[in-house]
Image 1 (tube, rainbow, N blue to C red):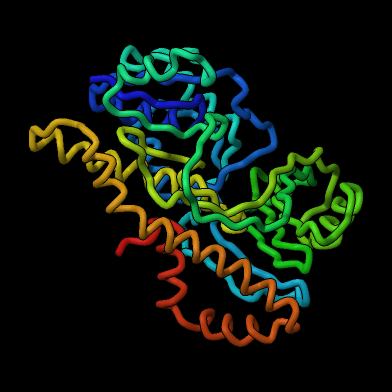
Image 2: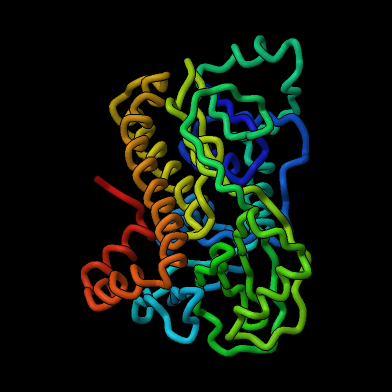
Length: 359
């Protein structure tokens, strides 16, 4: 049988490679080549998820920078961290450029005989007829007009992404998250001379890009800056559909869950979804069962509550620090003092970031 994936994007390339490894045929239908190959966008991928990507694409060769510890600061005191996550002699996550990992998976999908890429107009009158040829459809393309009920929240903020060029810094393996009054600002190491930044700024602050550059310089205390790239911008939202499927179509990737970028967990959630879907397919194949709509129903049962809990948890962190900034860090100074001294709580927080929630 053939499985249809809608959208020419990283999610579908990873999923297609995984399915092809199971000897399943895959058609990737896409409307155009407008998928974002953003030069500045970076992805933080947990160690376990990075190992999974290598397991399905062992020839993947992309520059991946290890991040060994994470420090969290508040706007009121950037001289002393509120919390630090560090695992001795281990990486917390790897930082990669979106364009590098996109190109790597696209390359292997194009030469795989089990995978075919087909141009397909979303507005075509024959769209319905074409899709009827597929028993299972997985849609991860935002631009394919979707009309479904969803739980959503608009943060009324814009995420600015860019790359800092700085003087050589030995052991640039420490990620920094500062919860400023404007919104969370992350410094994410890409190499000893480059660091990615993600600054989510509330729209209530009417500031231009030059002012944002100055704010980044103000909050930077780790790097001797040479230059900052132009920003790429995206609206910050949270949403998840109330139902993951419609008939024989499963919603996936960014249209299945979009969360606040402050924790860098968006793509990690998608990889965990791919792993779960892969496991369910393996179970059905081993039992000699047909791959039909029940696969998507099982996927929803297994993942919906976990994804929602994880997404709401990220939202809670965002709202917590909004309140904390207004109370002069009275909440964080006491709460994080407890967490910082409790090895079990810190270990559990690291585990959730790496493996997700598993209840």
